[in-house]
Length: 282
Image 1 (cartoon, helix red, strand yellow):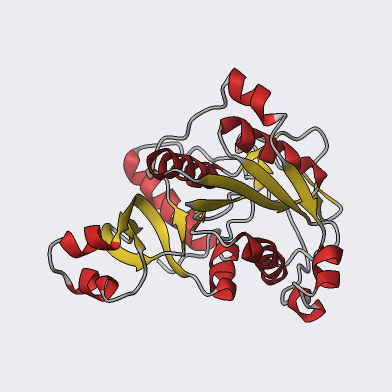
Image 2: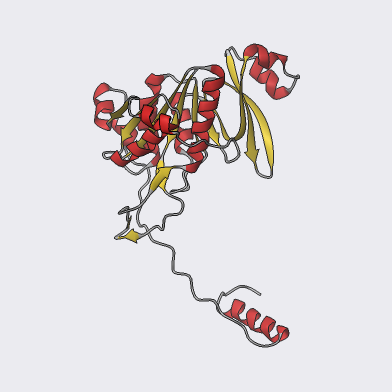
């Protein structure tokens, strides 16, 4: 099994975000692996422990994002690869195209990623990569089991399972995925992309021996220029399809109001404020 894990370095969720001159101020900020990507990495390590193979961590980011890859190596990834983002636009389509060009030669059996990034709230890059690579995909996984074709055929007859068993693939992913208010079980043939939801597992921490071993594990950097010169990427692929016109911090929270008097007068005052200040159609 060759498993590739997509990681993103994001602000620590405890960090206070400061916007200066239309950009997020990164000075003295603490960065971590995107929490949802931690579930993806942990699942990759568990599947490797069960089935053997290797785990490759891949990210797209500036030089500082190598810290996230070093952490992934210390936790247990076998090697890491960084796509330098300095010459790429801040556009999900362009990033997905460049990452797909990086991942394609790796020919992974399984591609894992977090459900979304907590800094931008976006979760489309991994799915765009799957589309570009022609991979089956399932999102928001809370349980993942990799099975052989024989194991799939031995499962109870079901329309979804029968559709999977008709495939010529040798290995399948049985995915229990989170949907609105419930869960859904699907079977997809490998190679495939699966995005991880909270609850898929409990991520481990890097150990001291793991931190020492990480220093000797391979970590290489690829640039967009190298991908373009090799023909793995076309200039049109990284043309931005979206543009950020403005970045604003949330407005400061207004001070609260205390309504004096008896409950009946408080209720009347509240209705008046909602109608006159909040402009609610009461």
